Length: 295
Image 1: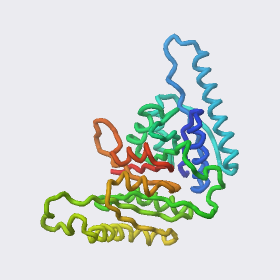
Image 2 (image 1 turned 180 degrees about the vertical axis):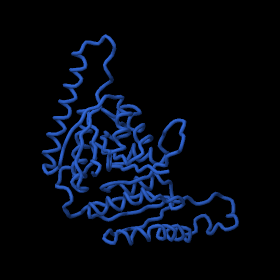
Image 3 (image 1 turned 135 degrees about the vertical axis):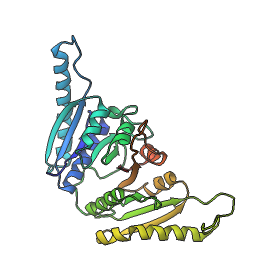
Image 4 (image 1 turned 90 degrees about the vertical axis):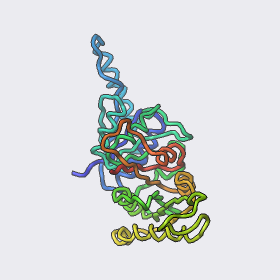
């Protein structure tokens, strides 16, 4: 059985926008959509039964509201809902294990709201072992359009790729996302010029030497060659730019349909966290951001 697309909902405007986006993604992928609400806490000792019943009733109300929004935006989606006990971060991380992908809402402008208040969103992204997509409530996007249909001016999928450590899971997610959208895939590698000291043995190029950009572009083309063969229908644009990766990605994704970045997991992290580039684009990108974990 194919894993569903899962949307975490909490009744906020952000989660409703994310649920609509997730519905279209589910149709694109030929999957069902699971709407998931994490209830606040467990029953406490001495607490009257009516308190737990009230939490369940509230959860049902949140799920019904999300269902109405989803069906209005995407009537053809196969839909079911579920509620689980919190804490929210733990519940969402567990849900991500059987999601393709997990979709959450954010308000943008550097702030994450609702179900994702405080460190919850970053906690989910840091700990999840399957892809997570954050969708901004204020991001301009075709979230209520029929999914999978070609449209004029379709925006690109952007992939941030470090050619020194390319990861198959991240690249595959980006190519498949572009194929499903019938969109171009822009693959970007950002490089930094060396410091003021002369290059050492085997270090080609000099600071400001335009040949260095050509070298990085050659490395990028080499990495993507096999993926072009696997996805012959995807138009690929390769970009090697000098500068900070986060800034380059934010500029490239300013008019994108989706930005895809990787998140390297460690075997035994003391404190799960996202890297600086992933953290920056999650806070500032104006389009949905897919974070694909890998080892």
